[in-house]
Image 1 (tube, one colour):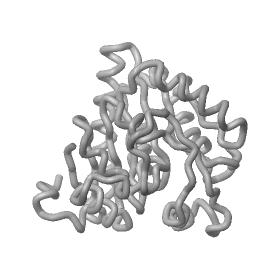
Image 2 (cartoon, helix red, strand yellow):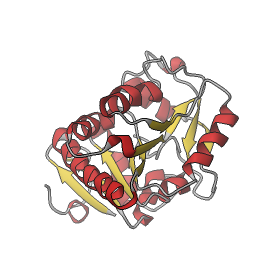
Image 3 (tube, rainbow, N blue to C red):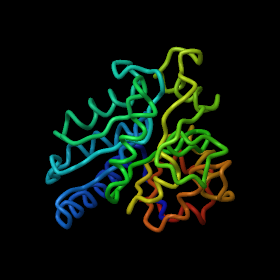
Length: 251
């Protein structure tokens, strides 16, 4: 795992987008397509804006999966991850092959269908974030590090749900769904490359716990340290609590 630190979240997003674009172009050139996993949330704003503006990516050759979705939330809801990805990635690029988690439909059927598509071939690159509670996708602590199931139905803890209110996706805690579909930790780790985009001061404690503490289900994103091709993009605020040894050089 490599940690890269940038001056602010705009520079972070731009740098992560450049690295992602290189990986997408390479996958398409070598295999004729790129299979990706896309994250959502406020942490991904600058990254997706920069990525969708870069030239030379054959987006019609990109196949997209997403990490997670609330159960019971319609795709029209402002907090829906399907709505987010349509507006911030799919409509901007012309991606035509994508697999949505329909959290407001037949959830077990959706999980089986998307899991079959996901595991049909390797994933070239996964874009992920890290929650304020250290979660990876919606795998809140203590996360299941053992299951081989591609997707899980999970209960969201209060810290995770409060983060969604803090990011203004919901008016108050009572509005935030208590359950979600989440890609499993082991499935994320099967990606050939992982790019983690983690800006802002509110993520600083999670960054320190996950990257300087024990690798533990209590700090779910700590598992990224076991992956041979993961790059974590931080800004100065999210990296603020890291030791000088962990910080290395600031880009």
